[in-house]
Length: 281
Ligand code: AMP
Ligand code: MN
Ligand code: MN
Ligand code: MN
Image (cartoon, rainbow, N blue to C red):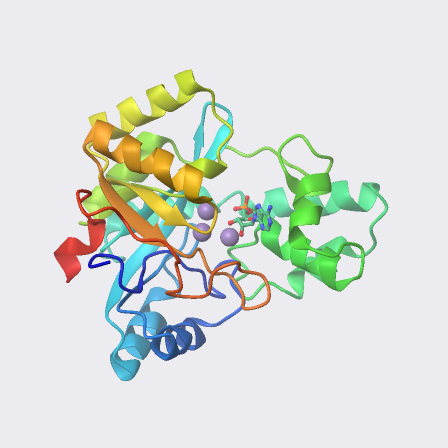
């Protein structure tokens, strides 16, 4: 039990698709006695200054992070950067590039969902958006749940927003090479987020991990709310096989939505794995 003590290195604020402001999130982390906390908003560092300030006030050990969207083998992969200098130009210009098409993509999503018969999708989703630079599928799902069309966000994704469903709009994110290099240029460590969520063949996984190791990628997120115990075990083995460090995080978005609260991760890394957070403790 020595390594896993309430370390939470994956979370979202209103700067992307979370519902708590960075300060509210840090306050919740303090209440939950989180021992080390990272804010990792999608494709933006806009929430980090406020989070860092709040972390100082509440006495929460803080790591600056980001979760970068990547296209690989036709699938969207998320790469978390931890311990970044969010002012590094290579990172900020890279993230700007990734964000650039999000609004146009969101407009297409709104049109596609309206074509499916849902009303006021654009205006409705926008009511849930706090950072106009960062519109995510989660905002659309939230709107459709609040409008009474679905009982859960999961149901919206399953029927309309997952790849291949009628509200899905394809988009070219960063390459794996770009994401890892931006994170490294900002002095951070690169982590493959929630690997159990991607629909990749074994061949594609081998290619992804080989490329990630080749690029100097650092870690795999082993413990996440997206993994059941079997998946966690699988990724523990992969860390060992590839000599990668291990990370963990709740991927918290909202009190009413997220399966795990901040810091309440429910699993512990085996002692032989190197925790990616060792360097910040
Ligand atoms: P985007 O970056 O716009 O493609 O949106 C991806 C976001 O949608 C993820 O970060 C999650 O917050 C959310 N998401 C994806 N799948 C699901 C799901 N099955 N249930 C709830 N939220 C989901
Ligand atoms: Mn999200
Ligand atoms: Mn993610
Ligand atoms: Mn996330």
